[in-house]
Image (tube, rainbow, N blue to C red):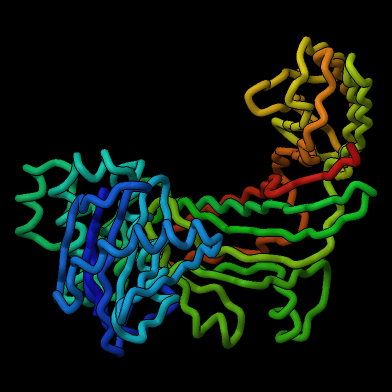
Length: 454
């Protein structure tokens, strides 16, 4: 069972165990949880909702002392214990969401629910912080009552909740008299009776490339994290089927034509029929209305850095430092990287900056000890150069400043580094209307770092 509370940060709720991959929780073991949200250094309870009362709410007072003790010992752990009570917690902004249990709870499910709470509150209040909780006590209580009932999670989709829990009190009273069909409907993420004059669905395939290059120019680690996002503007209750160039699918059907990809750590929206995907790799679903993330995935492969950086940093004792950075686009010439930012670390005592660039603009950001070189449009195969000159104080700085890496930010439209493709999107609706699917590909930088020798 679960209990949820908000403490200058505390929420208390009670849950039974066993869940599907989509946060449709059917808990079976008796496990009492009390959720609490705290500000970083405060112990005042902001708001509390105890569904079962199996755990004394005073137990939450032990959380902050335990956390501070662990921090002092350098042993930060996501699960802490005090007597027979265990604390499972996450941090969001300057708040803590804490779940307490005195049973052998399924920790992964508890954390899933905590993150779902953050998602719902953020959808409602834009920013989840102490002020937004204090300004919306009534709405928070309403949400806690709908998210969970007597320890059983109920409606956890923020779009459905927004149909009958609004941030205007007058509307809230009227809405209570009529519960949307989505609450009891098998398709809880989509309302019935949706109508559009023009039926369309927009598909965005977005991939982030993570790269770590050592000072010798060797790629130490690389992977691709992708997501497929939808903006659905379809009438009725349509059935959609999405086809990708999935290597496993091609192997199952005996085809092996063209480039295929192997996706790992695939995570779907709850609308996707998992049994169908597991049997024949078909992504079949009734989509939520509006914007949603259909799926996310990871591709663990060796990735050539799309923007290669070479740097020469020379320090002249007691006088100056000179930096030369060369950037080269290592992607196809037909593509263009937009809004490229090359962030080059400089000594903390540098001053009097002077810059010269073959394209774009460079500026000094002293509060971050960085030179930021911005290139609005960077075609594939091109090379650009930036030179920077800084003065140094007359007294030599012998402090060890470390060697922070050069980082790069960019976005390349109409391009995927993995080669993933949407092969088809079939839209089936009983009224038989024709709908247009639109597909867009975007590759962007994730954790993109290049270490330097200096």
